[in-house]
Length: 242
Image 1: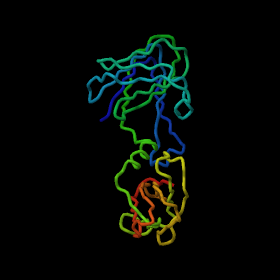
Image 2 (image 1 turned 60 degrees about the horizontal axis):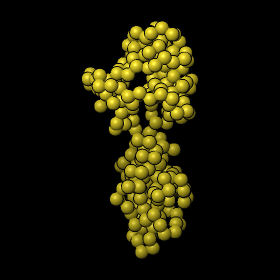
Image 3 (image 1 turned 135 degrees about the vertical axis):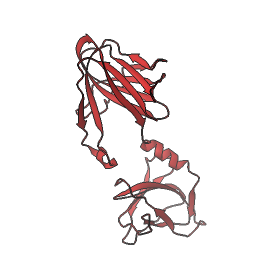
Image 4 (image 1 turned 45 degrees about the horizontal axis):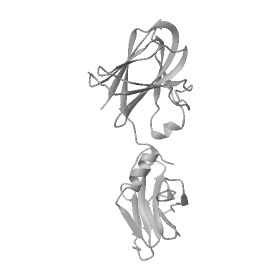
């Protein structure tokens, strides 16, 4: 579900800028907006045309040339009222980033340039959209999975959706329970899409990725009395994850 923010400001100047960074690996080029505003800007949040209260409105000082998030903590946090509104206090002239957040994972941001001491007056509409899970969230979900392969040794084959082997795919072996901070080893598939590694007994989380494919996680337990079958991993076509 999308959530809309209305920001009333003076002398509206809307600038769409391309963010040319590592984010292009996700398959899209994000845009950000810079709004020239006066004082006491009024922010209104709505969902499906109806006011939405309880939205967290975080205000940060400054933003990067491409709209990058400031590395400092928010100096002001407001909560939209029952009418979906919130009014910024008097702020020194300068650049600010306003971030709106609402559960479960709706958010959007606005780059604000306060260039006047006059009161604001115009309206701008932005939309909150569901954000993809973070790396930490994906990792936690993968470690919580009950789909675990118990193997006597780590070996397997990586293929595409129709079963063709993927060569040079990367298999990153993480130690389960370390939040991705401890890597056991990293191997690549051969010309037949196969990989193998000598690992001590224990629990591991595999992250398998390949150029032009979406990465995936697999949980394995290495136990000498475990299954000797080959682990079969199928990657889906998607944004490159290498």
